[in-house]
Image (tube, rainbow, N blue to C red; front, side):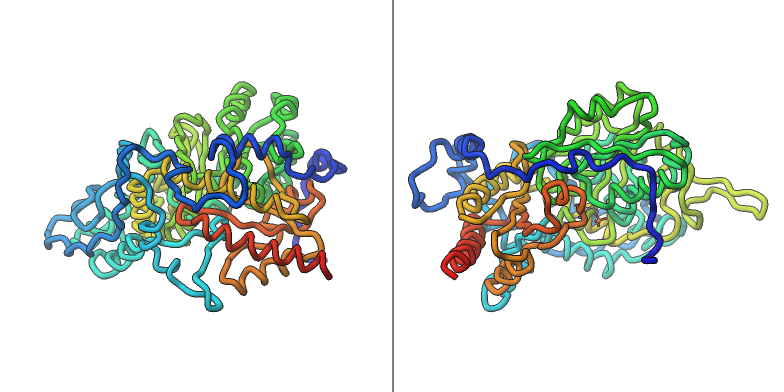
Length: 507
Ligand code: PMP
């Protein structure tokens, strides 16, 4: 027997025999193209000027490179300044929306990895759904922490403990502002989205989900938002139910409405699908779930780097994301939860940092968020996450969304026009991801051909096997965008795919 598989009673995959997605609808293409570019020029199009697509404001100002000089270490102080961001921490991000025009070429200079050459070509990083590269500001923040602030946090009278605590708690406040959480105590640091979902399943889930209760996920979910719920269902006798998608990869809200009932305890959905790029209507889903008396978890792993995520506007109960997908280091991520929901959850791990008082007979736990942060946390990378979010704020998430949307529209149109390409995920509301398969080729063959030209894409099942099965597939080629990508990189991608397609036809 292989491993220790979890088998939970679950409803069969919805629409298991659904027909494969139809070729990209030309009406949809025209609509998308018109929305972003106005009437399409006849091919070959004019040279790309991002400002055309981005409807730049009247005065275009080059965005300054975000690479602050390494600040001096703060002056020695005998009194630790817990919970106050001192001079060692970069200034907080700007949420006013007053941003200069976006200049992708200036922004790219902030990312050392984007200057690399692969197989003799400048790297074209189109694997952003897997992880993102780090701006120099984040790299500098880590070096600064280890050079000038390194200490364990919270419980020491010395100055370095004060600096490290300020760095960690300052980053928590930066996260709070970034997702517009009402209170900083609602922000829990974890390793990433996976750990955050497991925390909710093993703490909230064990307390609130029982036999014959139902947990609703969508067909779009990453395995990280399926397996912990399967494990919970197996342990408690609950059932997993699945919101189906239509042929474009958008969630069927009519079917979702039918799934909700008084046994529904939790609805856990992704905001952006990592395999298809579908943007799910999570605010609407949360409102529907709430009316049925269910709690809501939003997996924002693929959304925080592409669009404004506001937990108060979404009105979910939990939201999770990973730092490394939003230009921060690996090993740090966030669970946000509503105060009253978190306060009603037992700790899921025991140890130092999460306790108020311990005897051999009894332990008193800390309040939130510390009760969920047992042991020494990832202090430096939390500071790195704060720096990454500051960086994103300085560029402006709306500028990012506009630039990426124009690129996505262009890439979908160009890839979709290649004979033999089948685009997977053609929902009207999409972000970042351009999954496809190419007739006559295994996905890894396409990935290898792209790599030879320095173009990095992911191929495989993207840890989202159920949604690929829905389209009759085991794997796709998945280019995925971030704000530092250019139209030129998409042209390079399209050229390779077009050459492969032509070679197969003439073979
Ligand atoms: N959810 C989604 C939608 C994802 O794309 C990913 C990562 N691919 C995860 C969850 C898990 O993130 P991590 O591996 O960083 O915990």
